[in-house]
Length: 301
Image (cartoon, rainbow, N blue to C red; front, side, top):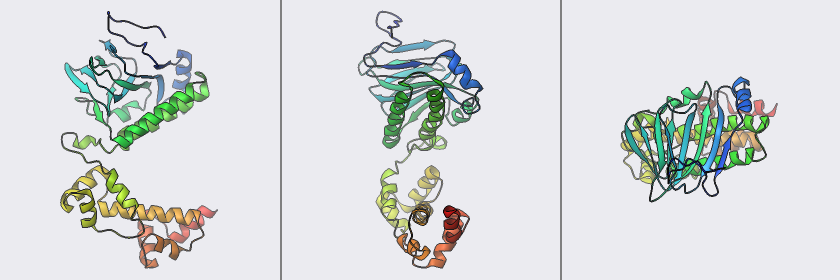
């Protein structure tokens, strides 16, 4: 790939060890027509490691939406007359047609994984992002998963830009956006103005105690929060109160035991901390909609 210099120092691409895929227009047109990929598909894909002097300015925006994940160093973006700093562990989403400029920090140039994408479903994802500040904080666990997913994508298209890998890539993109927007403990759009909490250690604590019930005060102590603060924050970020979420994990474990072992229902119940099989059945039905026996019978067919 030739260097594209915007002046004596600024570069759009051409970095050492970069990965840069621009998919053929004919292939993209086929993706736009295919029922599996018309809703969301990738048009460009790459990685720029330590991209010194990286710079792009698009006064009329890009024909596609742009996702950039900063894995190291730092960069910046200008939109709506505002300049934002992009730090390690942050992602940037630029909507299609939005005038913008972005580039690497001059002292610590960023390492970025990036993709351009399009499709009728893209606005359904973008509406989860406040466009007045389209920078998304990424929790460490989600960041590691994003990098792994990008490397999987590079491997997928390494053999060529053919129909099957590009179809796979379109489905991959939904997973990537799902991780960024819905499996990312640092990003809760409704709470952008206030603090968020990384609950990964608390979730590990819960996983280690699936064989017994836990009390709210135990969870609060593990999270180093007051019970009231934990209840409010956890429910807002995870969608359930903390004790209810732990119950959900215990029943999910029970489902796995009923599917993959020969334990009796009473034995599976005890393995998940339920000594009373009748109470277990009531909780199981409330969580899954069916009794433990019916759940097992359905999986055995």
